[in-house]
Length: 112
Ligand code: DGP
Image 1 (cartoon, rainbow, N blue to C red):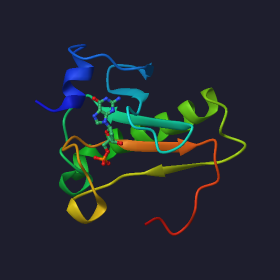
Image 2: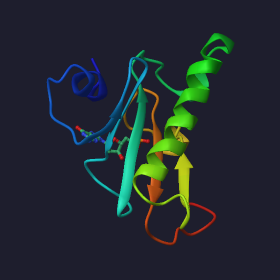
Image 3: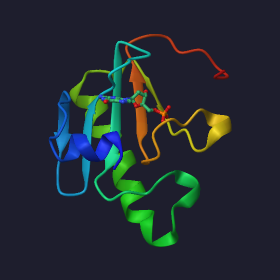
């Protein structure tokens, strides 16, 4: 069971900002920006590289949830970045697909 499944199951606490039947969004425990929220599907897909065509609606919902959370947390106008780390070269550390939403500071490009 991944750490995110434990958050979904309320076995460990998290600062949840949004939840419905399909997704949950909560503040990252080790934030890399003043706003750093993770948007996670409740159904486990280990990483983006393992998503299937049938997962397309859920993938779209993750991005739509990022849009809503960004509005809610006041970064829609100032700007924000949405990141998915898939696999070792990207530094993925939790094998449960998640979208990072980062904002409230200027973000450099390209990422490291
Ligand atoms: P990634 O490196 O893309 O797999 O990102 C995993 C993120 O998960 C990382 O930014 C830290 C976060 N994280 C790990 N464990 C916990 C936890 O127990 N609670 C919360 N809120 N975030 C966690």
